[in-house]
Length: 484
Ligand SMILES: C[S@@+](CC[C@H](N)C(=O)[O-])C[C@H]1O[C@@H](n2cnc3c(N)ncnc32)[C@H](O)[C@@H]1O
Image (cartoon, rainbow, N blue to C red; front, side, top):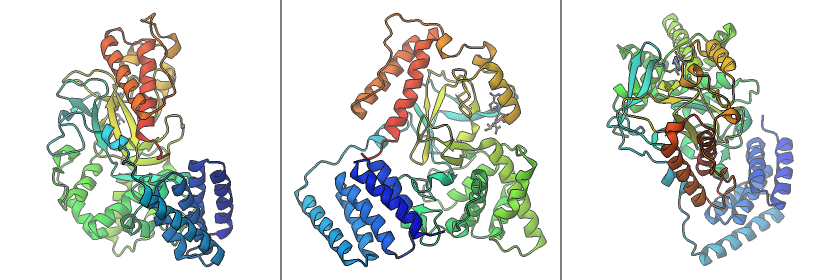
């Protein structure tokens, strides 16, 4: 529910943070304030004014002007209006003076596919294939040799929702960070948007409410359903689309090479509905579908049945295929929940050869070790690796949650945890943990990859595992750097 009282308390915190030079915290609090401020109120104007001050401090002058404009739209206090206008003057003066070069866009320069893209699915390397066997079901393999540090998949999950606790930090629709530009939904306090397109999405019209008790996974189920309705146009059209699919197809069976093809989104729906399914973990989970679809008018018994089957299918698929977003390497809890069409085919290993790094609203899959042509690619599910969990804990977990007996090398040979691993290199120097710039961090990352390649015949060993841990942190730092 919108509340200027709540907005004001965030505004006060934000001003303190701004005064102390804590810009990220100030920004989070101004965004919280925007989220709760009553539409067209002075409070809304104050929050935009606060954000414009941060922009001014970090020399993002165009964004400063955008926030000033928003602030003036609802400002009714003369004194405050004068202050904002004076900031605008200062900002315009700076723009006239400024000749600073544009900064390198570190993230998009660095996170690019390392191999020619797939002919039909441009966000993955062309050397990847989905294969199938009795042990893993469908899985991902490579037809070319890969080296540590190769980027093989950059997938924006098709369905994704934000942890309700992070609503002031990212766009509710696309999950892009864009924190300095977020603006609130005018009706509810549950969503902020990064662009007009996202704010006008049909999905949000169904989701727009001030409900506080929705669980994270229910939100994803709801998104899976309403996004499919938005794409097809109606329940009837969704039903027709589902009836059109004759056999189960993976994403690689469709052609996404033309980004303007109007079938792309419909094909993504079809590709995600053919993912593996499992019973949800609790019987109560089924009760969720009843409230998920309550916004929709059901006309016939046939529609009701279709709806029920469709949601049960979504729930079963979500149960086994969902991923969390982790924008920080140290956070224990996921900050977003998502379903992918391709990445869902990665099998688990407690000693994986691929790392998942979350960069803005995409999952980037990067090889950690050399992988030979013909070999399978493995990621790590739910952060259960041999470095952090005992063999028994891992086996119990995967038996219970995914019903498979993990047979990776670390499980077969019971690899020791990090500090008990053999050491191979007396001259090894523990890697630095602080970096003065992204450029230096990138150099360290490359050095680590070279060391891993050169010493892989001695794996598993302490040195390589330590460098892999450092690489994970470095990739996060490079990928998720805040603008200041
Ligand atoms: C996210 S899905 C992966 C794709 C799935 N194999 C398919 O055919 O669609 C997870 C499921 O894959 C299988 N799987 C993943 N890793 C495995 C492993 N290490 N050993 C055995 N089965 C595994 C299990 O059936 C698990 O529930």
